[in-house]
Structures are given as C-alpha cells and as structure tokens.
Image 1 (tube, rainbow, N blue to C red):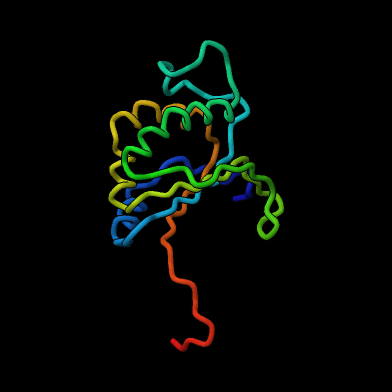
Image 2: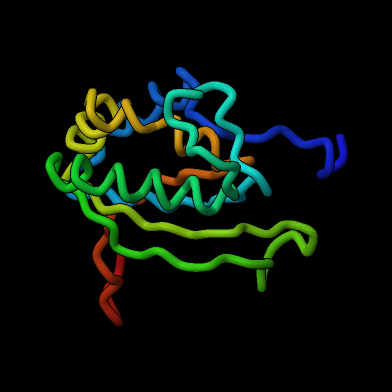
Length: 151
C-alpha cells in the first residue's frame, strides 16, 4: 500500500478506546491532534449542519471548534494550543498536517465525559465534514528527570 492509498483515520476504534481506558491515566491528559482538511467540507453525512454555501474543510473545522469549546470547558478541559501545521522537520517528507491542536482535560474521565456529551455530539458533524485524516495521541505528564539522579 502506498502512502497515497493509505487509510484515513477519523474516529477511534473500539479497540483503541478500550486501550485508552485500560491505560488508567492519572491526572491531567493532553490530547495532541494532527489534522488534515478536505478542500471542500463534506456535509453529506450531516446535512442538517451544512451551511447555505459550500465551505472549506478549514472553515468547517472552525465551526466545530466554536461549537465545541463551551462543552470542552464545561467538562474540565480547555484548548492549550492551536497552530498551523505543515511538513515535518523529522518525519516522512510527503506527509503534512494542516492544523495541530492540543487539548488539556482534567482527567481521562473528564475526556470521556466530554466525548459522550450530548451537546458536543450534536455538532460533531462539522468535524466529520472538515477532516480528511487525523491523528489523536493522548499524553500524560511526567516529571522532568533530575540531573545526577540514578534510576
């Protein structure tokens, strides 16, 4: 399979969700998002959310963020970083990401509460319409190594 024929990742699988829960992450969780957008948003799966005129995937994602922030904050999370992507400095030369985003949640439980929130789910179609491919990496904070300390 060539990179051009590669699979797009848009949602977690049941297995990935199970592994996330089994990690038993303690404390805050930061979600690193890498996103690649469609040229034109595809609202075919959510016509009720479609704007009156065609918009870009980036514009649809902006609608998603606008819709999502209140629910994210209500469940103990916040947007830490939103930035333009591009090609990797270290990584595959033919791979790029349009946008990077870091979301901090108070805990894995608060992330799961957010991800299943009825209000949030009502606008999830904007993300589906916007995103062609994505990656989501849950991160847990660790202490900095102390100079001279032995394991």
